[in-house]
Image 1: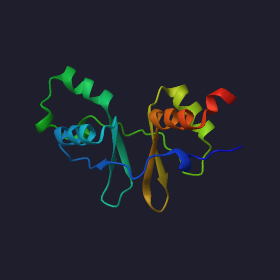
Image 2: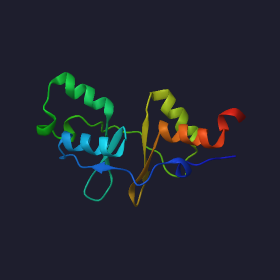
Image 3: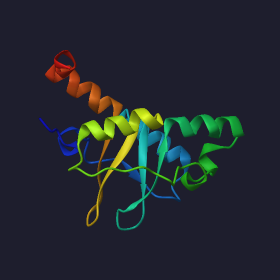
Image 4: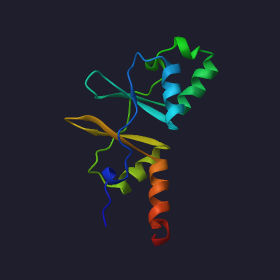
Amino acid sequence: MDIFVGRLMSSPVQTVTRSTPIQEAADLMLRHGIGSVVVVDDVGHLDGILTATDFVTLAADGQPAEETEVNEYMTTDVVTTTANDSVYEVAQTMLDHGFHHVPVVDDTEGVVGIITTTDFTAYLSETGAADAA
């Protein structure tokens, strides 16, 4: 049975812009208990992603979070998926690249969600699908 990304993805996704201060992005992530925020332009299309791992680089660089903008640490070469893609393909991509977050995009609507390792864990926990494999 094919299972599609749209069934597992988290939506709505928490977003920021390139000019958002890193401190504000960190506060948003902590408030929502998430490991990433998607960076979007003025019309909601993907510009990049900022993950908890990026904060390690920020700390190592000794940069003040309140004076640093998201664009200085975000990843711009982002692998994406669509709501109609197979979760099996996305899971393999995540494993191959060591990703924990993949934005879900639509050509018209821009960013419509995100699929994360936590979404896969919740799905497997609820369905027992891991036992069937």
